[in-house]
Length: 203
Image (cartoon, rainbow, N blue to C red; front, side):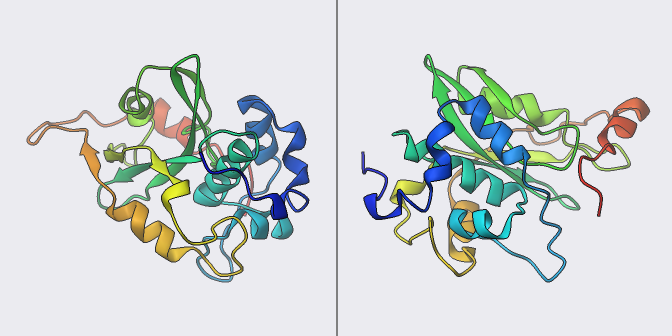
């Protein structure tokens, strides 16, 4: 596996203590949500460290960079939704042959996952019932295979430009459908919808 670039070790020295998934998640949690008040962004990990805010894919990239710093492959997982909702991206990791995920979100759901899942699909399904709109309609439709950032040629660690081409590659990567055609889903009930409105950071 390609090593973390030696010339960037100093810039990312904050990762030294992030030697467990829990510590990576705790670190990502310290970043207020990037509400994109000045327009959409997809910042590199170095830019995110400097700016000090992050939304889901920026948090996932930051977590993936921390895993790579400690000699692990930097994987993303894309959770793609249907109409009216936004996709979510998490950073994958493995412990003891099982998958877990670091997740950056402003909500009470779609959060960290312990490494207890046999496959990325099984992990994805743990998010299925949490993914719904205010009217209760469930929206999670498909998930990607683990997206290896080491196969992405652009300098995603330190780029000063937004990584829109990375998002495009992730969006166009093979995805696996979750809901069989014609399946009628029961909406999330009222107590789930109320819980889903809990947020960590206020606008």
